[in-house]
Image 1: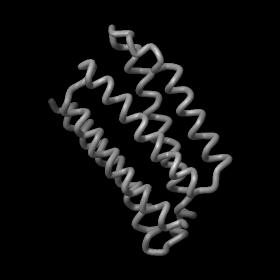
Image 2 (image 1 turned 135 degrees about the horizontal axis):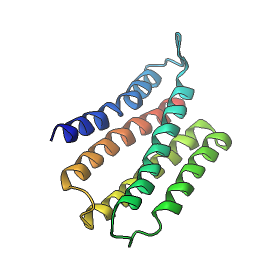
Image 3 (image 1 turned 90 degrees about the horizontal axis):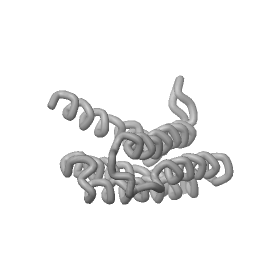
Image 4 (image 1 turned 180 degrees about the vertical axis):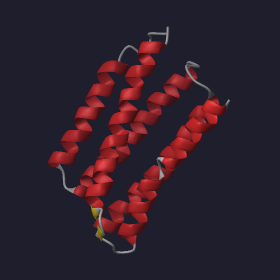
Length: 146
């Protein structure tokens, strides 16, 4: 039970940099003392989180007995590669938009896993809330950088 509470707390805490960057950009800040360019901070943090989340799908596939989601290892690699190429090749607004699509796609995969009862409904509910918060923050960031 304690592990589940910590996991949920960490999921919500993971939203904070998205919210912080979004609010900072919306207030007109572009550079933070000691930290640097807010769009770069947002971009790097998004890369880390999207890559981590994609990697968890591979890990989940490895530990479950139900191998009907056989595409997860390859899919997780494609998502990670896509998001990195998007960061390198796209302007920041398009990168953020692509990131929103990636987070929604990862949520859809989690939904399919929840349907197969590979994890709890409460976990998926938190994932849905966290993805919604992150998506709103990223949408606000797109508006701010446009």
